[in-house]
Image (spheres, rainbow, N blue to C red):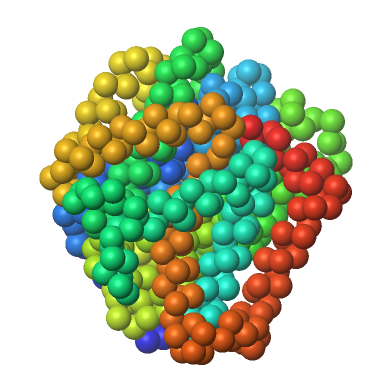
Length: 501
């Protein structure tokens, strides 16, 4: 199927009344939850994911993608109006966004973020249209050795680029892989780490763990920080950028989009790196770098464009290779697997309506964000001011209902509560839980591909070093691991990530 025919099929799929309605609902719900400080895309999708399991696969993925975009945008709203980022990649937006808000320019800052996000989302979608079929075609020649090596690179990258200590990142990856081994071994049929409990025979449901760690864990952390939330919210006046604003933010939006498109494909912290890289570039090439941090509109437009472009292109490895680059994409893969759809290079052939429908819905979702969120900014401001002590019971009830509805199991609710407490403990200990979710999804996949490769080669491990793709990927992973030992690399890493903590 050529690109033009695929886009026509995608338009037919995304424009149906059902899919358009769920795309609209996803964008709206994602923004509504995403504007709450501390509840970013991962927590938002984790809490709302169980409610999509009764939908068709294409409708469910379109809605989840809308939730993703909405929660991404909601993070910038909170960052600008309250100086509280809704997610890690919105941290940099607070530097100049809130400074503009304190100067009475909150509306112009929000407009810069919305326009930059829409343009970047459009370019990111076009990049998916061109790059995804090419990568899927290459991936059709991949065997278990190549996939195993790619998974190793993804796990190493998530460990190196995550915030916090490297040892903690390694521990989270190891814990995620151990949790992924719970259940019945596919090859031997033996029970592993079930402790005789029939509830664990099918393994740990990733939705239960993600909802607990990111949903309840984030809410518990926000309850603790309730007293430190801003007492007032910046007022929003004009939402129209001035001529000077347009002149100053056009270049940063273009450059930020380019950075986000490229870095979003990388496994690990692509969204986070794109935002900080775009901000650092604009500050370096600016004729007035002294204005950054004091209300420069470039400091809002560039990172928001980079953030949204990276959010789009992060779908490429997830859809074409079946490998998630971020914890959010891991949740997307889990949702597809529950729907009976296996992401990978065959998805363009076996599920063309799902793939192209999702691609077209990305542009529709970004357009809806632009049309809806600026007029509704007053509503989001009032929603931000609701104390968490009122929201907390509602969130707990909805997450418990969602988790229980997966298998009608009270055990899953108890398990979610346990991981909610663990998620809170992880945050108190300074341990970023995103690598755990990635390892939980990728660990069983790595085990399966490792076994397949060794069976084909009759136990000869040199098979991983005979394929150019496999050995090249493993060399990159090895270079990253060796780089950790270099003081200069560690210093740059700490400087780049310390602002997130």
